[in-house]
Image 1: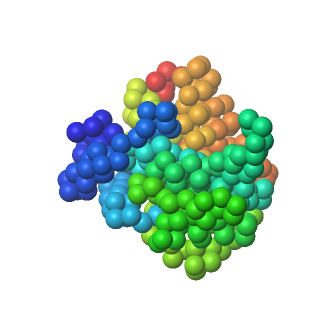
Image 2: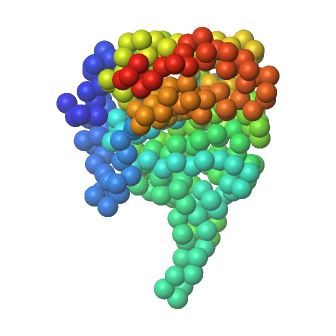
Length: 305
């Protein structure tokens, strides 16, 4: 079994799915010149049921839409799926400036002639990559029209002025979307119908502790309970709309632990990684009080590692 699939086996993932992924990888080898796009994720995705649902969707040829609140692991899952399937990954982050030319490509003058400079969606379709469509619900109409064609069951992209692109049989697209971010909008039914959808559940205590231990295997049990408990407290407060999701930042929590390892006091590190991300003064006071109940000001690096 390939190294990429071992953590699936460790989580008890269905053996039939694992064997089909292995067959997929053998059927669609990746060219040597694009192997640098097969990126090992920094954090494994923990969650057997979600992994099985996602793998089954991709194996049967569907595209996948991951929806859910902040810090539910949408991007981590997307990166892990590309790694598990052994595919080159292309990250397309949607914003107000993303248009059809950003996705398909645009004309450029090269070698004394006009040529198409291929965009991420074009390359992904051509090379059989996994396209990660980040914040897809921020896509403008111009960009959404490209997605409609790309994700259609016919698997063909017609580029005006150029020949049509037939999608590589291994090409898949994984969209991610958060609820209620500024600039987001509802996806129309036609676009949603081109995906199978997974609503990502909140991070569980068990999986949170696994993630922290993955990055910091030498963390003390007391510190694990303190830092992990703080994040879970913030998650509950955000779910109850008592605070916004700004301070509920897993990347910030992990970065704070990295600062502690460098030598910063835990309380100071959490100020940067968690507390100061709540810009509203009243919300920051709530978060600060939560931090104080979990992480004493007198703690030093030795209490954590």
